[in-house]
Image (cartoon, rainbow, N blue to C red; front, side):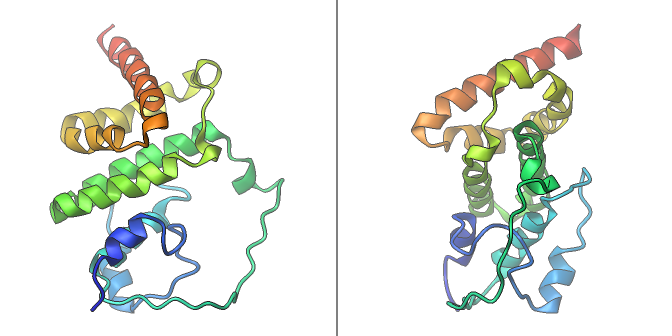
Length: 187
């Protein structure tokens, strides 16, 4: 039995959270792949399944051979996904992951925070908040309010664990967003 597999997955050592490049025992997929969650996901559900599978994994085998070539098409929907929508989906998926797996304890929470922190650090999710945030303020409000209400520790850990150069920038952006959201709700 190998140790630290979950943490290694959360540090992206086994690639992204995609399922297409992994094989699992059927019982793992049945146990972790059919869990209902709070919001419908489109593009981030693979990572949610992988969290449970890697949590329970006792052994991982990787192949050095390239058995598949993934082609990125510049004009495809995946490639043209705007950063704001991607950021929203990652924040929403983080809220779902915390909700689904919080019962596993602090080790699982730490890994989930590391995983989504790494995803939020991708340049493709960099936002020009002053110009692009307003249409996404309402959709972002729901997962952020949920986290603040039901899992405040997870939200605090996400902000506290950001790499130093990114931490103050994202923290101030989220603080401004929360301020706008709370004033909109109160007024």
